[in-house]
Structures are given as C-alpha cells and as structure tokens.
Amino acid sequence: MSQTLSGVGVTPRSGVGTARWYRPRDGRSETGGREHDPESERERIERAFASAEAGIESTRTSVADRIGEEEAAVFDAHEQFLADPTIREGIEAAIDRGEPAERAVEAAFAGPIEQFEAMEGRVAERADDLRDVCGRLLDGLSGEERADLSGLPTGTVLLAERLTPTDTARLEPERVAGFATIAGGRTSHAAIFARSLGIPAVVGVGEGLSTVEEGETVGINGETGEVVADPDEAAVDRLSAGVDHDAIDERVRTTDGREVDVAANVGTVSDLDRAIESGADGIGLFRTEFLFLDRTEPPDEEEQLAVYREALDAFDDRVVVRTLDVGADKPVPYLETEEGSNPFLGVRGIRRSLGPDSALFETQLRALLRAGAGRQNLAVMFPMVATTEELDAALDRVETVAAELGEAGIEHARPELGVMIETPAAVLSARALAARVEFFSIGTNDLSAYVMAVDRDDERLAALGDPLQPAVLRAIAESVEAAHDAGAWIGVCGEMASDPSLAELLVGLGVDELSMSPISVPAVKAEIRSIAAEDAERLAERALAAERLPEVEALVDHD
Ligand code: PEP
Ligand code: MG
Image 1 (tube, rainbow, N blue to C red):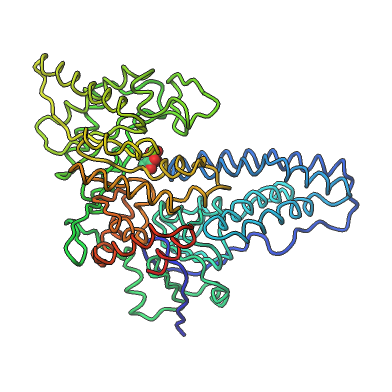
Image 2: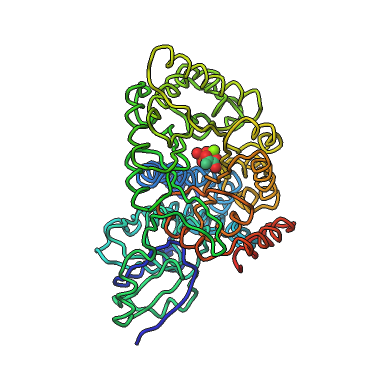
C-alpha cells in the first residue's frame, strides 16, 4: 500500500526508482578478540591516516572537476579535521592504553561529533564531516573499500541513515533517481551536493524511512519533501516527470507585481547552455577566472573575445562579466602569487588587477569592450573592491582602454559598470561607490566571511559565517539602501541567492536581481511568483530586528 513520508526537500526535482539501502557500517567495528600490541596498532593507524589523507585529496580533485571548486572546499575542512592534534593525540593515548586502533578512532571522534550535534542551527550538520573523516580512518584500518556508490544500477533511489559528503560526491546523476535520508538538514553537504548534481533529494525524513523495503518503488519530491513508498500510478506520473518546475522563460513578478530578475552564475562556456535551459534572465555573474584555470598560460585577447561574444549572444538579457578574481581560494598556477600570511586578506581580486596582473586586466578589458560592440547587454563588474580609489582606478582603466580602442578605430561598447559588494569596507563606503557605478552585486560568500571574520572554508565556523547572521543581513540592507538612493540596481550573486527558501527574505530586503547556479533558477522563479513583496518586506523587517542567527533561521524556515 502506498505510504507518504515527509522530510526536508533539498533539490527542486523529483524522481521515481527502486529503493536500495546503503548501510556503510553497521554498529561498532570488528576488532576481534586478539591482543592489541600498541606498537603494531600505531603502525596500522599511521597507514590509515596516510590512506585517509590520500583519499580526501583524490575526492577533492574529483569533486572540483565534477561539481565545482566551491563544493570541493569542504574537503579542505576534512583535511583540517584529520590533522587536528586533539583527535590525533586522543587516538594515540587510547592505543597506548592497549585499545585496538578501531576503538581508539571511534572514541576520539565520538566527543567532537556529539559536541557538533548539540549545537544550534546549521553548524550541527558539521558532525557529518567528522563522521566522514572517522569513516575514512576506519576504512583504512579494515582495508575494505566503502561500497561503491558510483556504480549503482540506473533508476536507484538510495536510502540511508545519512550520507557523508564523500558518499554524495560519488553519486552519478544519470543513474540515481533520487535519495532520501533519515537524518540530515537543508544545509548539509549531502544536500548542497545533491543540488549541484541535480539529484532529487529529501533529507531528515526520520525513522519512518526504515519501513521502506529494499526493492520497493519509491518516489522522491525534492521540493515538497515528500517520499512516497509504493506510489500509485497517478503519483508515479507526477513524480517521474523529473523536474518539478518547468523552466520559466519570461521574467517573474511577485503576486503584487514587483519584477525580480532571476539570473544565472556561470564559469565556463558549457555552463551557458545550462543557464539558457534553466530559463535564466541573463547572467548575473560570469566568473571569468575559470577561463584562466587548468592551463599553462592565460587566454589571449582573441580567445577571450570569442568566449565573451558567445556569452553575450546567448542572451538578450544582461550578461554581467566579473573581471578576473584570482588569489586566496582561487590560485592560478602560472601567475606569480606572493602568499602573505593570510591569502584571504592579501593581494586578491581587484588588488591583483591593479597590481601584478595589470597587463592581464588590460587584455581582459579590451576583449570585453570589443565583445560588447553592437550588443546592448554587456555589464562589467569588479571583485573585492574595498576603496573608492580602487574603483576609480578600475573605472579609469576602462576609460583608457575605450579611448585606445577608439583611437585605433576598433569597435567597442560602453558597458554598464558595477562593483561587487563583498568587503565590509565596500558596505561602509556604499554611498560613495554607488555614486560611481550603475549597479552593485553582493557576493554574500565573501561578504559573510569578512563581516564575521571567518574563513569561508572553515567548516567549524560555518554557523558564524552564515549569511543569515543578523550582522550580514544588516550589511545587505545598507547596501541596498545606498544603491537605490543613488539610482543604482543591486543583485545578490553569492550562494545564498540559490536557495529558494531565502528568496522571500532577499526580495523583502529590496534586492532587484538574484543570480545563482542554473539548476536553482526554475525553483527560485516559481518561488518569487508565489510571494507578495509586501509580505516579503515584513519578513525582512522582522529578520533585521533579530539579534541571533537561530531567530532568523526560524523566520525563514516557517514563513
Ligand atoms: C561571493 O563572494 O559571494 C561571490 C559570488 O564570489 P566568489 O564566490 O566567486 O568569490
Ligand atoms: Mg567573492
């Protein structure tokens, strides 16, 4: 008989398939009844650490290739957990007391896992990362490979207690019709990876999921959070449609008529097709640094010209190209980088374009202005701006390049110009910056990190660096006000804009454009059509009055 369970939907997609349970490690590890000689256990643990380290590195590389650099950064946090001296010392002390290595590992991780689980909000989900690292060490000790999730039969709906980032990264979207887990939340890495891979997924279903049997037909609705075991024919039809939201090609409005642009973030030419298919209203962020990666020298003017033309031709709508944003978490191997003690506070973004990468910046501007010739939709923005001098210098360079092209009789465009708001300094100088440009785009990934003084890749501080922190929301609100007072438009292109459940809050804060990974465009468009700007403003007001992150989380979860 058909049974419907409910959890938290994390991907705006649905699918139907055959249930298959994934139980990577049932109960405690087998350690046998043998004697445990500390010396040999120490050797075993050494080898397990080495294999875990290599495993994390290779997963990181494959996630960076298949899913994206941003998603791959979680494995940097796994490396940090693995290198954590407290955990290492705990394991060694237990081994010295005669414990088998397996038990020593489990005991050393149990405390930190419990501590994370006891925390409020999203940081609790970091316990999954610790479990992942712990699981790798146990795998290394047992010498067994984890079940290979990359070779699942086509049409599998994977069911599990929980999925670690490593498990989720192995899933192949062509084969997996969806997954559902007993535990887990909306911001877990399993959820984030599922979204990026486009796999229908529901997490946090609870123990009820255990009643679904191996081999049963299961439908997953990643938007409503429904998990239907043994669905009837009508439910199969509804769920197997694959995508819940048809791409909406036209612009969308709230129910009370406020138009909001829903654009896509792209990094490569192949992303453009996905952006078109998603029904995006143009491109809100073209991360051009991706054109400079995985090669031995930078693309020249002609190569860049061709790529930018392709992007501009793909849309009638505006295409916002961000100038090269390298440094910190985005190193380009062939560019000389002087690593300061903290690269995130070092020479990155516009600082490089006005400094060591000045020649590259000029080439890029030439290619961009030439690409925009005869087209009306080019917009160019600068990353990591902190001062008006930097913005003035960048705008000057645009003027100079335009003048040189003019003198040489080369056709070129006068693009719309904008600045990314991703440093606290830019927020505090927003009025002066807004007077100089046509638009702002808020990079909430970096802005949250810098406002909260948190490394954006440090999973231990994920809650502190959450864009829903009241201080970050106030920074967004101030930037919106400054932009609008100066007659400029303002978008958000950080990860926050990809989450349909945050669209109402951002619309309420007055943001004019949301730009996101293409897969989220249809769901965010559908969400905007279902909300009233007036309600959104009230929600934003309440969120701005909140003093703690959980209050804001509760507002967006329940509204
Ligand atoms: C951001 O910082 O939010 C942003 C969109 O830029 P990136 O993630 O490329 O640094
Ligand atoms: Mg950024």
